Length: 173
Length: 460
Image (tube, rainbow over all chains, first blue to last red; front, top):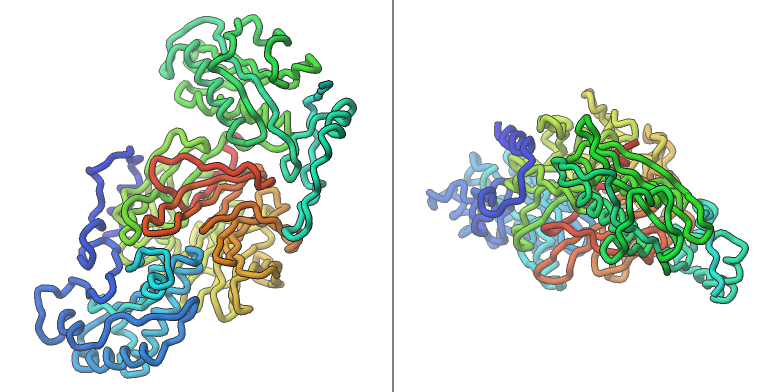
């Protein structure tokens, strides 16, 4: 079990040290090998990176207008543009019924941590529910919220916040 | 000047009104009035809202009856370090301005209990202690407090500790001084669990870390492979609940500190978060998101089915028990914005307590029961504030671009929280503030820090 690896790590009272336990999640953005790293905007998970053919993550990215949809401040309502993007994602997914997806929900930094976790969950579920309404079986979809933990834009400005209030559809999961 | 302070400090405690944010603060008395009042009345170290300058306390090096080597160092040298820790604790409270041990005369062992009352000016109080190595390998740290004006001994304590725990002996001495001079419960002999942060804002590495309340004895509990959030200690400090993204399944884990064993708090595919122990340590209250709706649940630590406490549509999270375990404060956006609510521990009788402008989040009930601390959001600022459990006497203690996540000191008279920097760094740091809002200071950590959880007193 993967969980148990952390158990042993926790048992140790690790001294503060630099390189030795530098974690894998410092991998480059978009590297799906990170233990818990969310994907960035427009970058799909690398789970199927070897294949760029039909039904692959690369195919998905090429075939849909966007993998990311954006939300208004403290909102989980889908904009007309978001619905259009999700419709296109659903159409692609209908062609590859064996492909599973993960919908990530994210929030901007101008909220408290726990509330933002819940808000990210709301956003991911908004996207999931819309995909389901377009025929994607709920059992193919996993949702995960990262709250404000994984911004794609690091500036503290409205343009950055707007990019971070997002749901990302990732192939795999 | 005819200062004649008597170090018997009045306890304003709960009797002192906490001014509401919009009410004018009581004006400080004119200096002359304060001076004349001091002739007759005890000097007051007012924890809550008074305007008083820090009390001056001399902490000379602590001598030893006989020099002896110990695993923590030679007893005489150790006496200097103990005095330094005592002075550091008192300074960090913001209520005292200690001098020493550096720069003060080294006292003889014979003076420890029979001080020279002169020569410490401008100090008002004097802390004299000693360090003695015992035959059984333990250390005894003596701790005497004197009123230099009344020429009276106010406290005399001895703490026996293992050499490795010498700092705890020093903290207990500082607690004895603080308690005697303020009338409040002690808090220095405690720890802080928090999330240590490194790395860029979009790839932050987060590790659980534990340290003494003054930053000593720092150690990491996880290695950073997985993002961890919102750790909270159990009342007996043997367990931790926290949220982890291990396996890309964000949920609450229950960790036994001594053994390192851990397990998910409950088995569910849903996200669980915002955990907090009940005061008796037997239950954990937490949030679970189900299909976009977040409610608060409670589950026995020993296992068993979770019990759902809230059912309103919306985000109900941030549950925190009252110290008697009978009520829970939480935040909910059921009314349209984040606000604070209180309910019975079984979920009945839910009522809103915050009504100010802006949003209210992350409520935590004081261990004394008399206040609830929270994060207030509004006007582009995030602030730490307190109010009564009935929602009265709101007082905002801090203000910055982003202050969040208060946690109470064991005596309910100070708060630790984190402050995030605006901009691309987004660096988060731990800070503390007392109930006056005046004594705000950074809490030193080796790396960045967030999500602090202040432990109960270690020596209860």
